[in-house]
Length: 209
Image: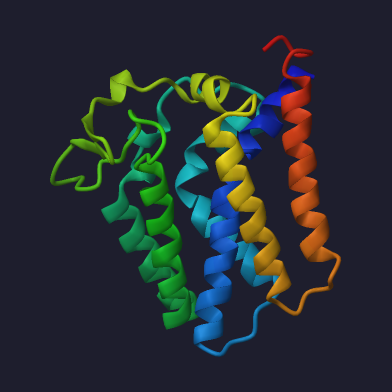
């Protein structure tokens, strides 16, 4: 039960990134007058989550992640954005290069921390190791590890969790609504994500949190 709860809890911080990634695909492909499919939306969601790939092994194994993963190479904007945009251009041309750029830029801006006052990103690495948040410079050692962060902000309703999940669900629903997908899609997917959220919040005491 605890392993399943940990897996579901890790899904909650991803909801906003998923929704924004999908919405950005709709906006960009519409601007280029290109068709939009469910696969395109999925790629947008993956791109918006790409920097978090470093914690996926721990999540799938049902283990906590005992480090601030913002210190990994996957959270180095200059490196990750440059390589991803180049690959996206080769594989999908200019529209997907634009999508890759803004999806990744969104993720890093999001991780710079507009609610948490101690999280940030090393925006200028490899030229500088200084971590920057909207509240100024900070030291990565002062930030709780990923598991502690989940405990503080996501296993129960908080300003951060309620706000981001609400915005994420709205973005997912709008993205599906504005495509040619079946009507049930833009109702069922946000509903499923809402159910996951309620399961996490209602079972936190059962698993000893």
